[in-house]
Picture 1 (tube, rainbow, N blue to C red):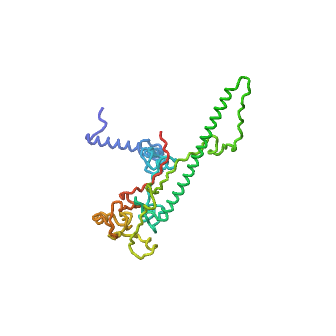
Picture 2 (picture 1 turned 45 degrees about the vertical axis):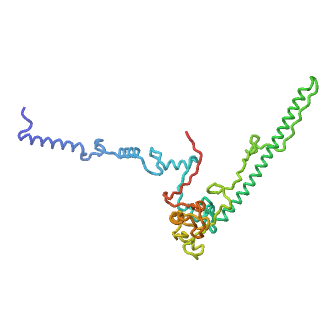
Picture 3 (picture 1 turned 135 degrees about the vertical axis):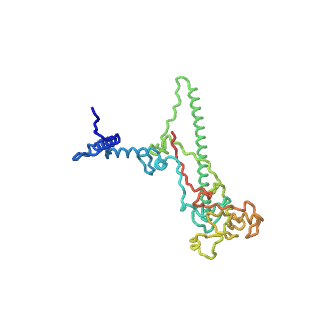
Length: 340
């Protein structure tokens, strides 16, 4: 049998075969005239359901960095903080904002600018009226606690004496019962009388099982509310700030951003400026002035009195908005922790 072609070269034959195969593929891919597109092969058609499945699989594989992520497999830091705050367990830490930072010239108790400021040996600034009222209140509270503790001790002594007498009476009754001859009449035990108060089963402190609250011996030392060290009225040092513009009224002075300056160098004072109080004069100077000028002669530049290291009181600052200020600006609240 002869060849299926009548003439032409092999090159022409290859081109004819390529055209024939391209036509067959086009016929298989393109729908015929009047045909429905759904009848196309699955490998050439991407249905909406298949596209949705692929999108869901991609979203499940990647982690969403959202605050309220509910589809991610990772327990994010924000979710942990939110769950900890809602559960009531675990230690909470909050960064203190600028509005919560106390200024260097404000009282540590009232948090208001001082009218008559005094400073403790540890450098905490107070309004004289506020700190004196606090010390008097603490003394009265200590006296009240001491009286309650003495009453408790007296009550304990009386109860101990009653227990001793009851033990002696029980020993006497036991002796009389042992000495009673056979067939003799035994001494009857006294019937217990009704108690003056009935027990209460609704109030926990009045139930029969509840014991009396034991008071501890109070500490008679009055301590500073900030440092916790012993504080007396004689330890308070008056402070005299140097106004930036003398003659201003108090309202005008408080409205200024830079209210006070160093008494020697006239540098502006703020929370970012380390300050110190000189005990003899009560003047407020910068620590830079102390290191460069005052420590050379160790004399008060305003009064001329000799100074010691204890006479230079470093003033505690309220802090700034920067972590490099050296002041802890984090509020912490300790709560119970559940451990597995």
